[in-house]
Image (cartoon, rainbow over the protein chains, first blue to last red):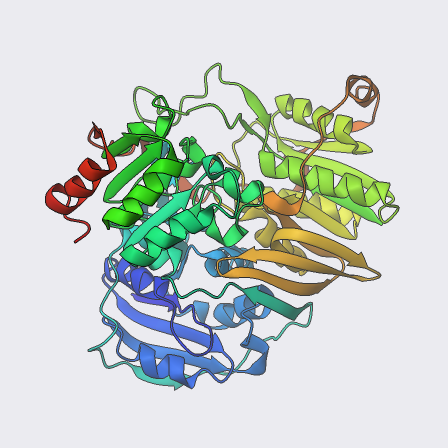
Length: 309
Length: 250
């Protein structure tokens, strides 16, 4: 049994979620190969040969794969799919975009966003915004799976010794072309990889007020997130959003400020190890999942908190 | 330009869904049903393209039981011109739904298919991408802006790090993210008018599509619940708890 993990990268570095995905693959007890499709991405392969548990890297270096567009990427994975019993990618916007397309090309039913490997064909996954956990068994010959990164501890990124095989580009598609990208630049850690996350909701009242959170984030080395309400209100960009349809985070410490705690938000953060809620409404549902709740006006509490850190 | 909008009937987003007593599935007895929120955004986008003169016809389609007609009527009240129900009593997986939809699309030949990025019941986020693969169409998932330009569309996508813009050749499949638009509410006169619009029912059984499920649902359970927390009285107490008790900051 061989397992293929699709690496996520920016042509320079491997994205951390790939290490969590390899961790899920390790629980399947097979030989693990890592596919890197990109452009001028040798540095990614050099990094990946050290990843714990990976025995072989399949690398396809071609201009067509520079922006990881779904059409060509899915076609490439399909060209090697027959060698594998399982094909995994992280349930990021990259994995969610490419894997269902691959799954249809292979005529198999994808298993989305698994949080536990029960056996080689049985997995647990959240449904209804995490209100319930379903255990599902796949009867397809190739299991195409996306992995919720926060549910698996990452493997070591060094110490391994994989070999590299170059594979040819296959069936490059010209249906879609890349126009541009606006990637948020920040000195703070990435939301999904941060050890501490501080998020603001509608209670923040404006985007300007997020500087109160940023001051604390900088003292704690934390990432800044937001609820959907805050993103919809235009306080912060969409890539801040934590929740059912945004990012899933599970840091050591999650501080929810001015967030009421709709189930769609809880779905994105309730697996955090310690949750703090600061809200002036003592009946806010966020307090039901908080380890430490502080009923207070955030405009008083945040400056005070910043001072005491 | 004809736009096809696949929609789905799901449990209303305000309902907290629980497992059945025997954990064989979720308990959907007597729960409120509604159109999936991402599908409302898809209908809205299609209707706006029609209002702008870019699209000539908007066709709403769903795959499901007879009661899904209710959500198709909602789509008609929101501005779709006609609707198609691909009727089946079986509960289909996304792969099978995409197969049925691709059959409908072969007959309808739309230039654009707009659908929600995920349904809030199964949270699978698969159908649009699968459909695009089956039809060999281009795909633009998680759209927050769509601009039609002749035989292509420029789509801004919400990706993890920010925004990405791609150009897709038509026909294409676009899946909607939250910030694409803010859907309107159906007005009473439009709800009345919708009752008279064409709603065509086709039998999935007669389409000759393999709709067999590939997965078995073994059980449904509640997630592990968190231990009840405490309320602290002051910021000072909070900081001390985080340092001394939880040991998550130093």
